[in-house]
Amino acid sequence: MSLGSGSGFVVDTEGYIVTNYHVVQRAYESNQAVLQYEKFWDDLAKNTTKNIKDKLSFSNSNMVDNVENAVNRTVNAITGKESKTDNVLPARVYVRFGENGDGDENGVTSYHYCEIVDVMKELDIAVLKMNSTTKVNNLKAMEYGVSSNLVVGQSLLAIGNPFGLDRTITSGLVSALGRSVTGVAGNKISNCIQTDCAINPGNSGGPLLNLKGEVVGVNTMIITTSGSSAGIGFAVPGDSVKESTDKIIELDKQKRLRSAKRKGRGWLGVSVATSALEESLRNRLLKDNKSSGNKVVGTFI
Image (cartoon, rainbow, N blue to C red; front, side, top):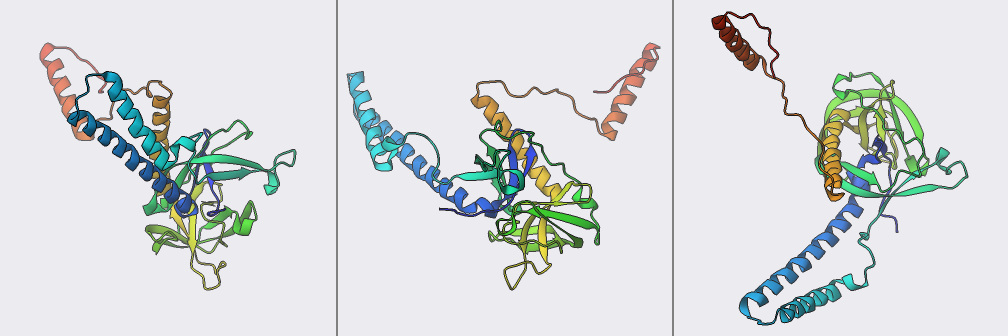
């Protein structure tokens, strides 16, 4: 059963994709409910085992293990874990690639399973991660423009999947800036870009582009009385999306490195000195050198 559909775009060649939160909202909430349910029973099993160990004294360590195993088996039977063969969550998200939406060069539609890495409800944004990018040739990330440089009347392009019609592109203008709207998921979104690009059901999560092909927004909702485009669409500003999703992706990459038992990314303990700090260091260095009679030019780190 389909829980929703929409559009998205690749932001990292390792398979990270940005879309709207409301596109994957039902899948995300379903999976979070399952995770919380399992955590409740896991915590219950741990606490029960601990209380039994604390209150009863067993001279035989095998008896302790038997009690713990009995508790775990009971919990697994209640939650259905015993019948599970993998850790796949019940609601799954797939992305589709293929020329003109028809499939690859062999005419085979290409669906790829994605994890929901994290969401930003206040921006109506979700970050997905493809499990494997080996089956997608030449996966390229889209580049961001600067949405804060947009002006009213500037030309824009919207790309998406309206009514299931893959790779549909429409054009329009920046109608207004700084709009606050209530998103489809019920959350308030600030500083939105208003555009008259034709945005319809299925466009959600698709990129809003400037004429350089840079992402300046993420299409999120429309105001309409008919359910179709009435020339009043809204997009989350690209600057906010980039800042938030870059953090989510970087944290996820570090998490995956740790899970793979590799050390985290290296870092250099260097920071840029502020003008006040730079002046203080300069005066101190010049003072020390003047007293010693040396003329030295220093590098401040």
